[in-house]
Amino acid sequence: MLRFVRRLFCSSVLDPANLGERARDVVFREMKEADIPTCLGFYRGNEAAHFPPGRFEYYAEELRERAFLTLIATRENRPVGCCGIQLGANGAATFCFGMVDPAFQRQGIGTAQVLVRIALLDPVNDLAVAGLLAVPGSVSFYKRFGFVFMREVPGEDGGIYQLGVIMVSRSFVEDCRNVLAERNITYPDVRDKIPKEPRLNSAAPGDGATALLFSVERLGGAVPEPGRSAKTSRAIVIIAKVSALWPNI
Image (cartoon, rainbow, N blue to C red; front, side, top):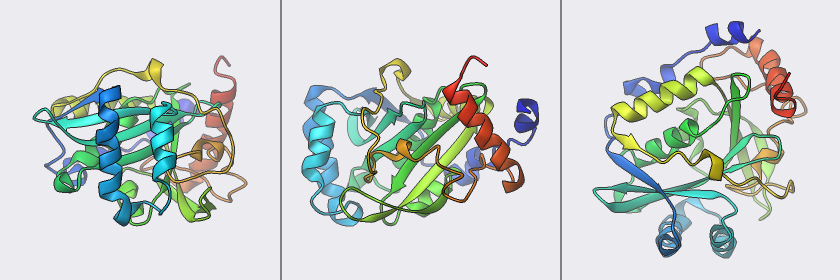
């Protein structure tokens, strides 16, 4: 079955035409204590356009408590954005709080943030799953990378957000890492530092999506890897569930 899944893999997501020419020459590093004000500044700079009101203190608290691993994106030694990643108890990842300094938006930084977090996924039995709750206006951006948006889900703040899920093979992750190297986008191997989500409560933008990732069948849809047909998706979802829960079989 896994060999069949590999044959269905399609790397069009990583085509230069899809990624654009500006996604290059970015250096990522792990957030330090001194970076927290910078991250909060990125949030404030994006708050009106991209985040629901009244969530700043929540983000600040989660950031300071290291509830998720935050990477700082730099270009020419200047911080230009940040992004978070977290693991659920089932091994699925949540991509959260991806932000770019408004002065550097539409310059490939956001694309680099997505690619780096995919590169940090650690597939089990050739499959890895990641999810996110998309803030308004970001759905089309994430669809470029193969995220499938199945339905809306309620957030802790009372808002309704689109749940996006991506399922990738080990070869896709390796291809992603190669593309990053070709584009001079560097990042630390911090896979062993990504924290696990302690709570499986209701989801919020950028938080808690892993609680929903393995409810695909209840959500009434399947999650194809980029380029995979829906016909094979349910089998892939089942494999992912079994692989995540019993990695040694």
